[in-house]
Image (tube, rainbow over all chains, first blue to last red):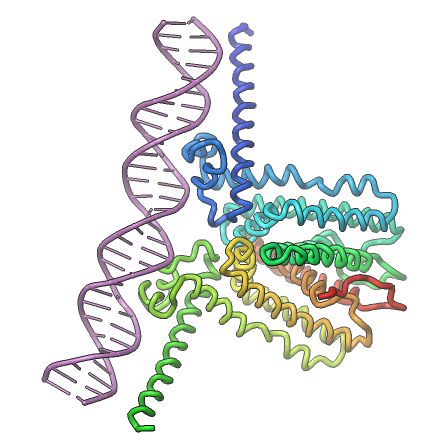
Length: 228
Length: 228
DNA sequence: GACCTTGCTGGACACTCGTCAAGATCGGGG
DNA sequence: CCCCGATCTTGACGAGTGTCCAGCAAGGTC
């Protein structure tokens, strides 16, 4: 292999890194805009305005608007899907895990509300826009697994089995979280202590719901374990 | 009062009825379009194309696009918010109510999927669009009450108390229903029996979850009763 | 029959959107 | 030093949007 060839390869690799860096930078700007405006109202110009580039550069790094959006969503998911893993690893008692989980949910709501607004928006859009479906489905499955790591560990620490399967556990927790997000957004515009009450309610609900799905006595068949 | 005045009043009332009729007609066309295309992709022209009128008529009966959308949502809610009331009234045993509730949820998913897609879309949009917030919040509360009528009656028939309050019960059931809707939409494009499996899973989950929120023994304090 | 209100049409408007391409800029290799 | 390729800007294009409005048809009133 000639030295020029090696150098060219090295340069190409460096450029690919540079390109990835730019794409990530762009994705972060896009996520900021998407989180504020939502999917429907985020134009490429608005996204570019929130970055240090002009609107044309998007088509230099991404073929499509969809490609940008999907890249953004995957980029975001890769960052936050292990948010609760430390809790699972560090927990020693069931009650401790439950407390830490509820607190982390509150923190998520407080600090990452725009991102989760965006997530629910995109998930809703995926019901109409076929192109989003694949990425959304994959992320939803990943989130389900994330929640299941918490729930199954919680059951393990309790020395009991979970009555609910991964899907059911994710479904109910996602439901109460989404409700809290909705209330948190509506409250933050009015009064500030309303937001705190929403956070407290969320923690209470999680503290109340999770113990329920632990099997108590001789298990009656309960149909919560999905077959698939 | 002169006969001309009475006649004028009568005519005005008749016209108001006519206007309401037209608005409802328009709302139904709009709901059809909104259910298929979602909020973001539904233009006034597309809505008018699905009706027997031209696109200009919208501004004759509605001031705004928002006024039309919100009118549509309220119109829809008024139709379907008592869907489960018959179950509650007719139920004689807890198990019977549970079966009927699960079956009705399946029916809802099968026959009204577009409307519920739209609902979740609009609820997500309301997190970004202030104008939608009030209507969405009101409907969400109404749905919570609707679910609570079922759950509290279920607890009553069981002779036990519900551990979960209205918000927690609605949150978890809404979560599993939304998950089923998501899966149902994704499945209906692929295989038909996948849709049936989604329906079966939904029924299983409801059958598994609802008994859990019934208080078992001497109640430990569980924090699921929201304070507000 | 003339007239006027009401209901509705269809085109025009101002604007935003995604996309693209021609040209400016810049930095490293010959 | 110049050139060349990568990178970025800028402006334009066509399609699509909500909104508005001049005008037509119909049906009741004088």
